[in-house]
Length: 336
Image 1: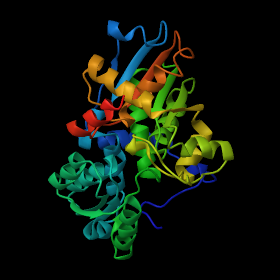
Image 2: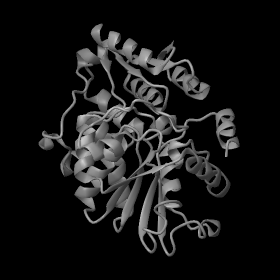
Image 3: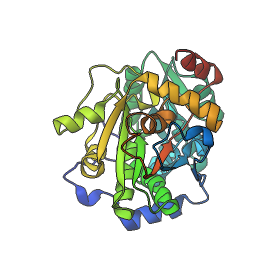
Image 4: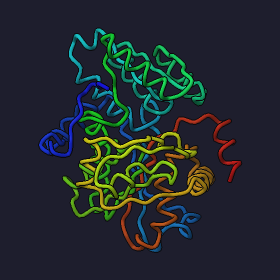
């Protein structure tokens, strides 16, 4: 399947973003995206569940354009297109935050967008894409949506991949760059992981700008493609995805992002859906944030399997995005 921009591989390490490129991308996005805050979490109610003596910060990418960090890479992907490609328009397949990010980036750049989505997509996301002016086509499942996207590519449209490629990695790297600028003395950053787009870019930036900082990835147990890929030493495809965190439900890893992960990510942890749901409730009650399951993953890992490990440490977590309807939030948290 052909996507724009083109993919790389682990062997093409020189293609990985360098210091100058990440700085340039950050400046290019300035004023076009939201400069989301990195805040210290000092609420007394959180002290009993946080690592003892730790300083915890949160990067609030759920306040980003289109509701997630994906707006960064989507806009850089559109920027990378030729004038001819812009005239033809872009296409994407997604039932999640990528669909909204592509719709927003297209509108911001004055480019037409066709987005293929599963019929079961959260209505809040469907309506958000429509409100941004994208042409929406519904399909029985995500496989059918990707097949339709491929037909668009064959017809001359440029597909924006949800996590693979240099512009997507650069977009995520700008997020990591902002975190390291705001908190230069970090011991660790905990990052939600789906296909690996966010963590590949964040890890690249962290290891360039704050090399002593650990990067830890968090996956749902039912969608652990990166954990399994690391165990096998190469990208793998899952036979089945089973998680409430649909934004972290990528069924496969890919060469470019996986190569960066292999080189720069220190560790991975996996969590049951119940831990994500508990974190959603805590973030709502204590932080007043309505977090979708993916957005709660870093918080869940910090207060769960990583709690003892980071006692006394300076740790950042990422609230990567949240596009969830009130009805779906209530439905998910009721399961807990």
